[in-house]
Image (cartoon, rainbow, N blue to C red; front, side, top):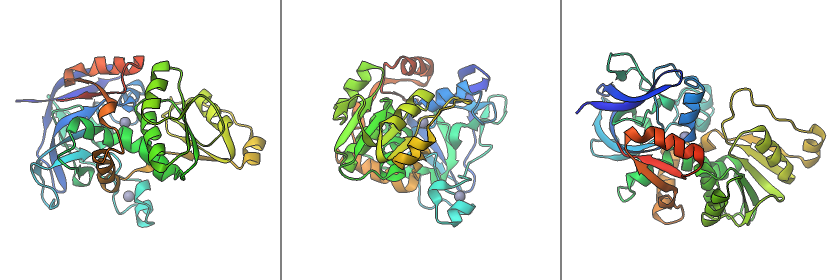
Amino acid sequence: MADAGVVLSAPGQVALEEILVDAPGPGEVLIRIDATGVCHSDVHVVAEDGWGHTLPVLLGHEGAGTIEAVGEAVDDLAAGDRVVIGWKTSCGECSQCVRGLPRECKRPPAAPGRLHRADGADLMPVLRTGTFATRTVVPAVAAVKVPTELPPEQACLIACAVATGVMSVVETAQVWEGARVAVIGCGAVGLSVIQGARIAGASVVRAIDLDERKLEQAQRFGATDVGEGPVDFAFDVVGRKSTFELGLSLLAGGGTLVLIGLSPSGERAELELARLFGKRARILVSHGGDHLAREDFPRLAQWALEGKLDLAGMVTRTGALADWKEAFDAMAQGDVIRTVLTP
Ligand SMILES: [Zn+2]
Ligand SMILES: [Zn+2]
C-alpha cells in the first residue's frame, strides 16, 4: 500500500496525499506510525506558512510507532520495537552539547531527504519528525523505546504535550514541593503542567482559562483552585500579551513566570521594570519543557504506567489521518483535550 501524509504544500494549502518514504540511511530508522496527537504547533506551522520549515512540509510531530527497519550503525533499536518519536534530541557536537547542555542543543539531528511528495520533491517534516503519515524516517536518537504495555494512542502524547507540560515544571522551572502554581491556558499542555505540578508536590495549583469546560477538566487533572491568586510560579501556556501580563501580575516575591505558549509573530507585552525588580521576579522560556527525548520519555512512560500521569484521560477524540481538518477545527473550538489520529 502506498504511503500517505498530511502535507502543507503552499501557504494555506493542506491535504492528505500520497508520499514516498525512502529506506533509512546510516544512523536512521524507518517507523510505522501507530498514533499521532494533533498539537497546536501544527496549526501554528500552517498559520505561519511553514514556521521556518521549507515548503512542502509534512505535518505532525507527536507520534508513536513501531520500528520497521534500521539503517547501518543502529545497534540499540530493531524492527518491532515500539517507540515514541522525539523532536528534542541532541547532536553531541555543538557548543551547547560540548558544554554539557544537551537539552539546549542547537543542531538536533535530522534525516533529510528521505520523504518526498509523489512527484519526488523533498518533503520537510515538522520538527524533524513528520508524524501525520503512515510511515516516517528519523534519526535513531529520536526514536525512544517505551514499554509495550502503554497503548500507542496514549504513548504519543509523551512526544510533545506531556513532555512540554510536565518537563516545564520539573526541568525548566524546577518547582519545589509546597510551591504555589498558576497555569494560564488549560488545554493539553496546560493539563500536563497541572499534572507535573501535582507530581512535584505543589500545594496550590490554580487553573485559569476563559473556557469553563477547561476549568472543570483542570480540576479533574489536579488543579486545586480556579482563578487568580498569588503564586510562586505562573505558567503562560498561551503566549499572548494578556496572558503574559496576567502571569507576571500573579507572582509573589521571588516568583517565576514561565513562557511556554507559542506567540504569533509580532506579539508584544509590556512590563513595569520597577515592579519586576521589586519582586525579584524571574522570567524563563520553556522550549518544549527543555526535555531531552532519550532521558525523559522513559521516565514519563513509567509515571503513566504507575498511574501518576493520566494519559488516557487526555485522549478525548480519535480519528484517521483523513480527519486532520476536523481535528484542527475541534481544537480551535476547544472541544477536545487531544485528538489522536491512527494512520
Ligand atoms: Zn506539539
Ligand atoms: Zn548539540
